[in-house]
Length: 109
Length: 116
Image (cartoon, each protein chain N blue to C red):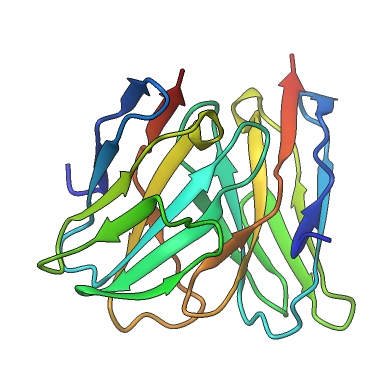
């Protein structure tokens, strides 16, 4: 079993739709979590950190449930430019990052 | 450009050859990480340095792989006797000193290795 698991998709949704990604992690010692975005053939870039209280950044909302070891990302009013692969990430200790497989999202006009 | 840089961006080599990649982290970032990413997968941790000290190596880092950061600034990753299974994107990341656990790493553009 992988330490961070997420549905690889692909997700194809129309522009303006709301899309939700889920992720689970197995290492209960993980202290911090992130969502990264990766465009095709580019490096991963931090989208947002994930806090237990939940956090929002514009159209993006991230949630963490430590009891269930579950992380989510919600994208509202999706734009064409949101098309990318979204990587769920846990801090594996010493700040080494443990990545999920990534969920590929395509927003259709 | 003050971001993480990696060279070369692309490398095509024949099986059995040695290759070396370079990573220049963001200035004053004391931690430097190497990851490997294969098609359709997320990046996987290989190794990391704090200044010039290599503090952790993944089981993925076989004896054919060696990484150095001699002066605590740039780092090199060498793969000896390359195999087709080494074909991947090799990513370097760095982070600032003194960051809390909620802060994160900045990635370079990667070196895409193809072993023929």
